[in-house]
Length: 453
View: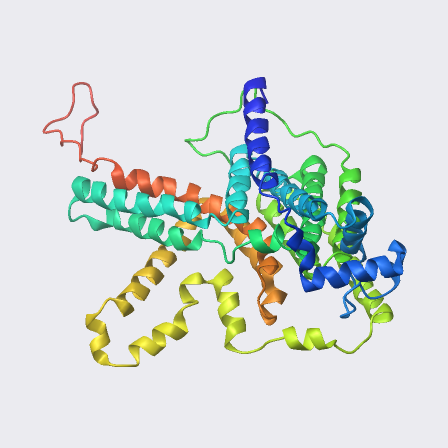
């Protein structure tokens, strides 16, 4: 990377980091939350950081979280009852998560613009500025509709798909839940951010290991439009990336000790391997066994250390029924998440069809389906972010919803949103370009041309 682009990258990352750190919470009320008060009282009463590796965490509701508890221990040792210290730690953990999203996206897709854009989108999610993520395609949709109508008239196929896809991106790009209050303004929210930090390190380090040392499958036969190889064409040279693989395993173990959502990390790491395989890397599947072995060891350890029955809090948090399906659809198929409301509307008074209520749902569903269809233009990025974010959220759908459940999933979903933005480019170009014109037919052969039969 040349000096000027490197400076620009560091400047953007510094600006994003500053925006999060500057929003840190410092009010004394941070320590007045009931969970926080009990956590700190128990930590000060026990006065033994190693105690949490051999039993329940300070709230004693049957969770094994020794690593994230150590961050409470650290703040207590440094700041005591100074709320600002706890607020800074929360903000630093969230900032680290944003920077790790950039690293992960770069290792997954080998594209610095995609990586930086993913960090920007995730930062907007952190600040609850999801409207800014969705407002751009909303305005573009209106612009494309006007320009397309002017350019192509009744040739709707030239610009209506782009208009609908952009309109659908507006709603898909919105985050599933606000993040700032729970991740920065609520001290116990760091359980999710500590886990996310280690989960992202595990994913990025594993991806780097494969990119450094995995063999490449032979490229497909070049087509007539592919540029020929030149002396400047780089050849792959394998390097020893074992240290990155070991770092990934250690980070995965730390994630398991931070928060229960990490049980999905082996599945997400398997998705990481599949994503790299789609990019013609001969990934070493045997490493996946290490992550699943960690998961088994973690579950056995929990079984041995924690009580086998659910705590009252756990029973209270579990849920089943339609709410689970709706929460899953918000990640898997947003256009179907409002099916229950739509069904209530259309099964009522038939005159409802002369109003805009049912048609608004139909237009939204049509537009979001068009967005998913358009994703084929960048299917690797879109599919990777889509599948991994869905996996990361999956077990949390069966719990009463809290915003911090979405922190890790939205970090991964940011990459999908960037991929969808890029996928819109060819559609927009087609929509706003001048109509194609058929060249005039030659009335007679050109001089010197071969005779026609």
